[in-house]
Length: 215
Ligand code: T5A
Image 1 (cartoon, rainbow, N blue to C red):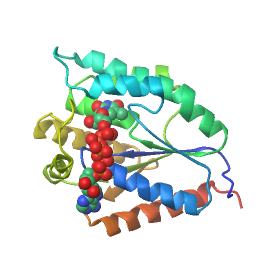
Image 2: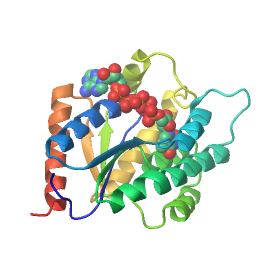
Image 3: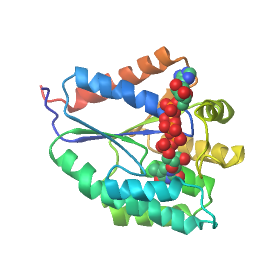
């Protein structure tokens, strides 16, 4: 098994239907082929308790859910996930591959819902301290095309049922954050056929991993 110099925290982000799950399967296969110790997880969720919060967040509700309630539940699930899964795996020098993390909160609750970014930053500090993803693969493509892909999967959950404008705002926040944090973000053109998406992802991984594996 190859050895990492330290734990490596990789997140995969993008608006609905861009192909994150598909991309994570490529990442998993590539890292396994490199013999790297790996934990694959997701947000909201990743532990039984946090998955219960996920159900609450994504199931359509009878009463309106306040934006602040949604925000706090995202971070409550995240706190549990960090303590139970992410921190222990990084301490064991594993690669943690997470389907969405706090950049999704900036994009969805900040961009989509209009929650103040400062409030998100305060919760990020409280819940995560210094923990941030080392690498984020941002899958990007036009919103309408991505929503068509998502629609093919069947019934939409509470967040997927938002308007196209909502997801445009989500996309713009992601792109802005990619500009703001060029060391962290790697943009993937998700509108390409699968084989080309896979090639882009593998090129990024090869570059990133070469910096983290001890020789
Ligand atoms: N959320 C999450 C917040 O609001 N705040 C937060 O802080 C966090 C963490 C989570 C929801 O919670 C919200 C965001 C979300 O609404 P999710 O399961 O992560 O839910 O979100 P989804 O975006 O719905 O994820 P999905 O797994 O449902 O979609 P994917 O993973 O982006 O898409 P995927 O891989 O399932 O692909 C969709 C379809 O497209 C095809 C696939 O085969 C599949 O059929 N496809 C392609 N087709 C052609 N060419 C390609 N290149 C293709 N790639 C995939």
